[in-house]
Length: 133
Image 1 (spheres, rainbow, N blue to C red):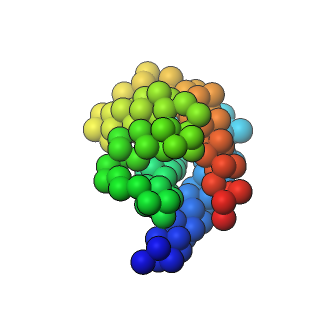
Image 2 (cartoon, rainbow, N blue to C red):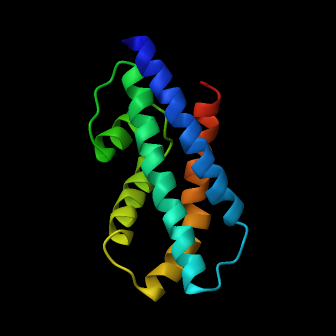
Image 3 (cartoon, rainbow, N blue to C red):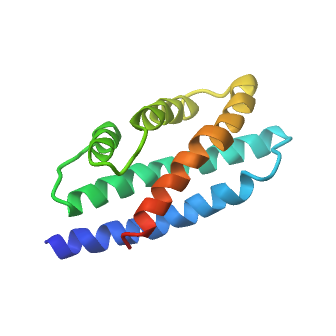
């Protein structure tokens, strides 16, 4: 069973890595049109979803039991996998907002937050987990 959990988190990491790399690539591009902003935000949503799931799978391979994004973030922070749990909790709230509402002013502000706040958090998680693979 532990071997399966080990394999699962490594497979999930590969998916997270692909999403993270895509988001990273476009974080250096200015999103001018509404469709570009929406696409960039969608890449954030995908990357965020895969990030908490890879945290969950990794933590389970380490013997922890977590079920939700919130539990995964809290345990990852308590375990030292995340240096700043607050950023991740805010990211979870923002991810939930983006899936239910769309507002042009919010989108513009959020694109900048993704680049300046959430990309460094994703990068840190990526680099920490990459060492474990």
